[in-house]
Amino acid sequence: MPNPKYKKAVKEINTDIPANRNKALNFIVFFIVILSLLNIFLFFYDTYFSRDKGNEPLLRLDGKSSNDFLSVGNITMIAMKVPAVDDKGNGLSTYLVVEVMPGSGRTLVDIDNLLFWADTQQNIRTARRVAANMTGMDINKYDLVYSIYANATVIGGESAGAAITIATIAALENKRLNESVMITGTINHDGSIGPVGEIIAKAKAAKQSGSKLFLVPLLQSRDVLYETSQHCEKFGPTQVCTVEQVPRKISVSNQSGIEVVEVGSVQEAIKYLLI
Image (cartoon, rainbow, N blue to C red; front, side):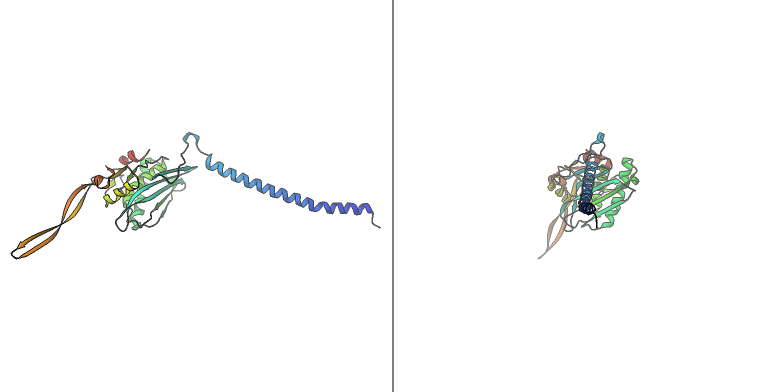
C-alpha cells in the first residue's frame, strides 16, 4: 500500500510545475521587453547625441524655407529650390536635394518628370567633379545621392548645373545655403558658369518662390525680346504688307521684379549662396 506522505509529496511537486512554467515565461517576456527598450534608447542616442560637440549641426527640415539643411550623424543633406521651365514654356521652381554619406564613391540619382535625362546626368558628373576640386575632398570616400522633384515635366537639366555644383559643395563642407538666393546656369569643367535659355521665365519663377536675388550667367542680366511689327507699302493701287520681328533689349530685373546679378563662375556664386 502506497505511503500517504509519498502521495502528498508527488501532488505538491505536480502542482508546482505550472507555477514554475509561468515564472519562466514571465521572465522571458520581461527580458524581451527590456531588450526592445534598450534598442530604442540606443537608436535615439545614436541619432541625436552621437555628434561632434565641437561642430554641432543645425537640424532644420521644416519644409517652410526654400533651402533646408539637415545633418544627422554622418549624413548631410542639402535642399534648395532651382528655377526651371516646363514643357509649356512656363517658369517653375523644382526641389534639388543632395545627400552625402560615408561610402565608396557611388553617385545615386532619383529624378522624376524630367526630359533630356542624358544632359542632366552629364551635368551631375561635371558638378561632382568640380565640387571635389574646389573642396579638395576625396569624394571616393562618400556616396552622393541627387534627387530632383518637380510638379510638372521639366525641360532639360543643363541649367541646374551651377546649382547642383554649389549644393554638392555645401553638403560636402557641411554648410548652409542662403535661402533668399536662387541661381541658374550650366556648369563647365573649369568651374565657369555657362549660358541658359528662358532667363525671364526662370527669373519670374524665382520671384514667385520668394527669393530676393537671382544669379545668372555673364551677359544674361539683359535679354532680347522680338516684337512683331507690320510694315505696309503701296505700289500703285496695291498695298503690300510684311511682318517683321523687331529686337528690343530688356532688363531681366525689370521684367521679373527681382534683383539680378551676373556671375561667371562657381567661385563667384558661392559668395552669395554659402553661409
